[in-house]
Image (cartoon, rainbow, N blue to C red):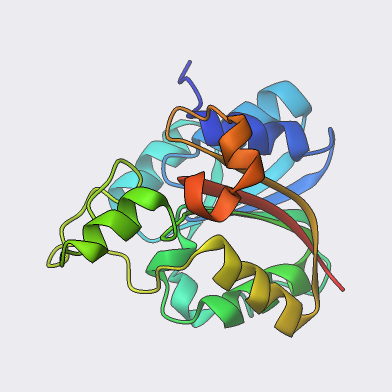
Amino acid sequence: MTTLRPELRTIADWIAPGSRVLDLGCGEGTLLAHLRRERQVDGYGLEIDPAKIVRAIDNGINVIQSDLDVGLSEFEDASFDYVVMTQTLQAVHYPDRLLEDMLRVGREGVITFPNFGHWRCRLQLLGGHMPVTASLPHTWYNTPNIHLCTLRDFEELCAEKGFAILERTVADQAHRSTLAMRLLPNLMGEVALYRLRSG
């Protein structure tokens, strides 16, 4: 049995038992396998990497090969209770469009992303370098990330689009949350987790 990374444990706690879940960029299907086992969800995953698709199928996950940059047009409105996307928002070409599609297809959306406003990122930028941190481990020339954002950026986009933020959690890479993170989330939080609904 695969151990869930810390952020996935939080997401699992947000998912109601017996719900329908679509996991965008599901990887090997770890989250969906856990949710099926522990919360009896009916889930599907979308993944682009053929090797990960094979492993997801081996894990008993219903998975479809799909490029998130083309959107979710193959799914009807409100066909899922939750649409989940972890650590992928910053790697798609049109994150705003994908968020709209997520909240069209699902009653709620669950998003996680690395916070580019974290103090370590800011310090490295002040030193004249693109940040390399635990939550952003790639160098500027080999990163898959093309649309990095801060918590403030993301929340401004949600306000602009009329998305309601139902829950927000910030944490470090080990998913520890401190008083400083709660008081100054945009400065101290390394990883952001949001639960959203269309306004």
